Length: 436
Ligand code: ADP
Ligand code: ASP
Ligand code: MG
Image 1 (tube, rainbow, N blue to C red):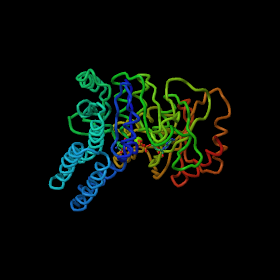
Image 2 (image 1 turned 90 degrees about the horizontal axis):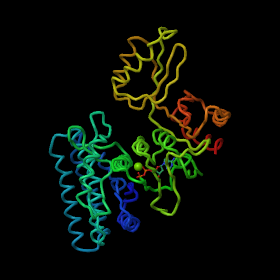
Image 3 (image 1 turned 180 degrees about the horizontal axis):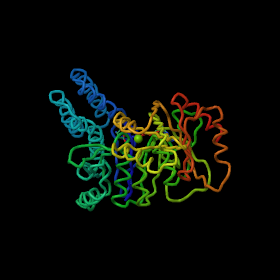
Image 4 (image 1 turned 120 degrees about the horizontal axis):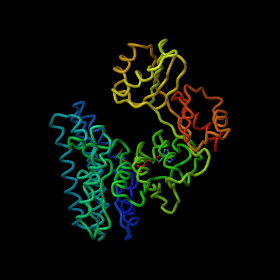
């Protein structure tokens, strides 16, 4: 059984859904994971923000506008009265539900329930379309098996034991459709895998059923060597190792959810990145195969904060770093980059939710300086420690860019540098010129 995940643009209009039905219409057994139609989750985020701000009229207007958009979609999607009727009933129930929130108290639970509507809509609309054109499919409710634990990590045991009986209910079926992104949390409430999380659903489900291959279908022909939104003339990479792809995803290559490689890597399941607009393109294969020494790609992650921690006590002392790291651990704040000198340590974080509290605790034993609006640029490939020249090529390409921090040697797959976000574009362009 293969997993095929289709992103927002791949289901972004009636026309795209028609094309998608053709693309998946063969007898190969598969689970199709769908995102919300493109733009929908952004709209739902806006609606939730308006409801938080008690701007109920504004929220209602946006809900109405979104409903009208979907009404147009179903008119173009279906051609029989029966399917259109089902589509209308579906929209009524989801949009009445959305409107019901404008009357009640609004908390994070209501917000998450709102954010889940996009994937619930897209999967049901597509399932009804398959029904209309007489392609058998089973709609699997992701909320019955996708779950995260208290640490917001996928609860793999729960998922494995709960997805299997769902599939076994339909021994003859070979096409299952399910929602990406949405899940339940440790308390059984509706939750999600964070923005872009449908990729993560695909790899988690793939790992749970030991799938033979996970395909991520999107609007570009695979992982490119640089961010195509920022740099011209990028090109797709044919093969990446799991480690290389994981670094690129984590450090900002938007084509993949930041942590979606791990489940596939753990179960050694190849991940193929493919383009729905150009299905014959080769795309990128991500697997355990190592692909030789070379610089493969660069990616950038914005919204980084650097914390410089200085203390006389650090000189010749042990236990200092542990004291620092314990504070970050207590506030569940991951550290991305770290560099040290004899009397200071600099580190970066992207989650600043608890920064004030962290700062207070650090200031009890050291002096600190905080810089915001920074970007980590990550150069990914296989840089065997014994090979010469990689650092020189990278820093030669960056000779005109002021660099705030450098991290090299942590793994053989990654060189990271920290720059002011204003210099991100120049940095990516300079690396494109110098490295590829
Ligand atoms: P989907 O909605 O299908 O999940 P996304 O928008 O999340 O699609 O991801 C695809 C987009 O990622 C591409 O359109 C491209 O602009 C962007 N992207 C950023 N970095 C890269 C990269 N290195 N390679 C390919 N695409 C990238
Ligand atoms: N619909 C969700 C989002 O826009 C999940 C996804 O598309 O992967 O973030
Ligand atoms: Mg995505």
